[in-house]
Length: 294
Image (tube, rainbow, N blue to C red; front, side, top):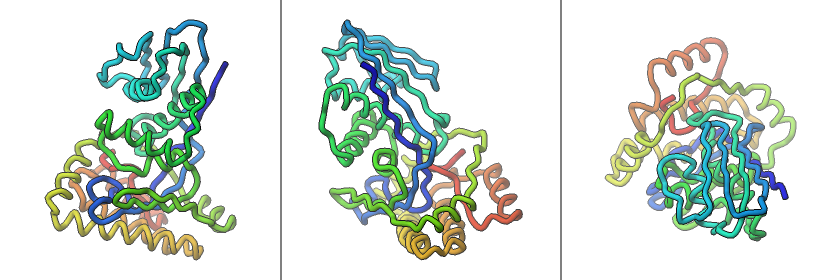
């Protein structure tokens, strides 16, 4: 038996940061984001024995084990280990191959997409009737709680649901609102968007740790910036639904300027130079994908 799963990567236009606890519990957050035609993949081939072999193409790592009791979190293939423990795959044997269309640290939600893809193959292997909300919540719990990887809630829901969404984060729930955008507006948006690889990856954990601490301490400049970014996501959604792409681009620029106020390392001279060149050559607005820093 061969099981294949893929989950899309995403770009977040506005509201990023308002999905990072404890802000959603304190004030409620929201983001507007879209998945793209780049994916994380997981392929599982069952075995006659109970041996389990995992191969990560992107990291060049391989792992073999028979019992989940052998698994220790050490920064190597921990996403697979966490999912294997949760699904209790003790009685199954398989070969698993994992890959992604974007490099780690790209800011496109790649680790969460990988997590969702892994859950996808295990769900089918064990015939678990999980809903999309249950898959996203499980991916969040495994990545953020079980493994302690810093980050927000949006990536798991984007990778699970796919599409163009306005996602709300409330104290005890997440609501995914698919946006009904007219095809001609979406086509125009596509023709006006460019995604660049800066060649710089980033580790967002430290940036997020500082944001979390500042939010916990109710630091005024951070809370006000997050409040503004939340409203910006709402305004951007409305502009998009109206088909006002000029305002959409202008709001993207305003959002980037406010995003940089959350932490001094979200941008750097290299990124600022790239952004300046883009603006000088006709770009209305832009941003760095993910938490920033690379």
